[in-house]
Length: 482
Ligand SMILES: CC(C)[C@H](C(=O)O)[C@@H](O)C(=O)O
Ligand code: SF4
Image 1: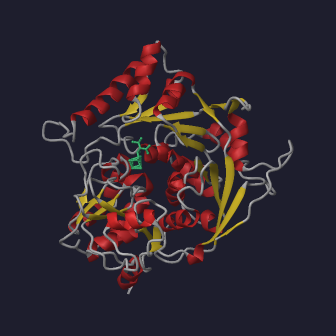
Image 2: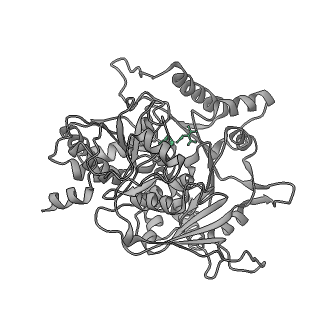
Image 3: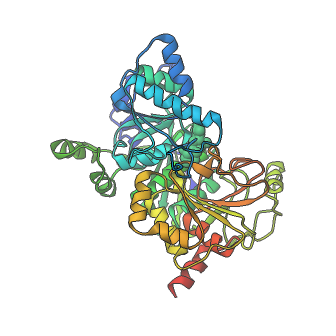
């Protein structure tokens, strides 16, 4: 990795970065020394966890939702991933979980907001359904009361995760108060090796820049390795921008983006599509545009990468040794993970494997898992859950027979939702158990009390499920191919 800061000089007609173009196009009132800018928001996505108080605030002030047509709701965090019983009843983990769901349903009905409820073909994790429906569009501003809203930046949308009080502001005004962020270009060049995925790339990047490496910045991912990624892989990368502390992540839209969007139900059609496309093609950083900071990464150096600690910056290549603690934080992480510095990651026993989440719960992730699980058996010690990110992902995967491959291997094929990524719905990792997880956070207790999380790619997760311990997915994929 190299890092060369560029001077912060801007003239009115200077070439602009993609972030600056998106920013300029949405400023309603420019920022001053005393006040942040007022930004117009094109799309507000909402879910059951961060909206009850926001709607209550609206009610208390007697305000309507300003743009119900630009607000879309889904149920994902607190939802069971087991199917309804014979009477159609769902088994919620807690009364609170059920209450959140009922509250969002009532709020959406009262304010005329479309909700992708149970029974809807469009329900799923908020960051999976926005893109797959074609709600997430290049050049737009998107907010959601959820930190992984950065995912939508993969389409060249400026997408911020916001807090509950901001959710209230956006519901009431369709605007957001924001200070302009700095820009960080992460240039990844070269080709990824076989068995090395977008997840490994982003874990490697966060390891290189640190969990606060993006603080105060909007990251634009650039370079030949990024251009070569599929749309779903780009979402995996942008999704984890927040884990590097960034306000948002961006990838300039290109033909890969446009081809993906052309197949979505709600993207513009006909003449509106042609007009949109012409505008979308201008959404790139101009040659010579200045970034506040540039970091360069060589994709050829990236190996399958996992976390060994308790934040997403504590990473190592799967075939490397766990680092020896270089301070109290690292030692605490090692103690929590019950790892010794200097040990090999390979061979560490695994109890649970979770495939899903807004990072890796899309069809291509399901396909990679099926590729590894085909004609194999999950190790008897391991509980493996495969949770599609949306109803559509589940249907598409089932149409390809992926559910049958998953079940035949002895893994569970569940209903869509956030599930074990955050364990709010009762899909928990047991105390002290080691989980290999395709999600994005490995904080203490994230997947259950004293649960130990190793973040990994779908290939790595599936290979570990079969082996019953941490393995290099490349060995597995090679054996398979042979
Ligand atoms: C529940 C929600 C507010 C939270 C977030 O903001 O990200 C969750 O999605 C997470 O991943 O931790
Ligand atoms: S899948 Fe996980 S990270 Fe994504 S929105 Fe749900 S809880 Fe948050």
